[in-house]
Length: 128
Image (cartoon, rainbow, N blue to C red; front, top):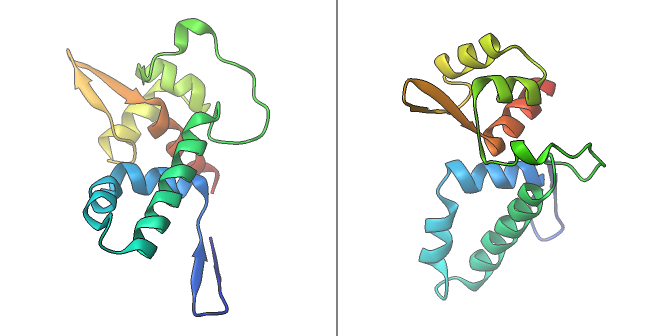
């Protein structure tokens, strides 16, 4: 993130941060509310959405080349074992992150399911 601007402060935000804000800050609802009311804000919220979509569309939240995942693992929801493999940690570390609130997950039938997007945010946060 960078603070820049000649007409006053402006902020450059990474595409990953845009995806995070889209998912957790309710920007979709806000974007709909300001559409047609505030053209400048509407345009900027749409640009955040486009950056988020671009980040989500990349294989691993990055523009760098990555090894494609096997077709069997293309589902959006991952078990703790699959999430651990993608994050490069143990499944115990994934369960601990879920318990500590550092990794969102849904419990289905007594087992956690983690979204691919949340794993990418988790990996990026660990690398920071």
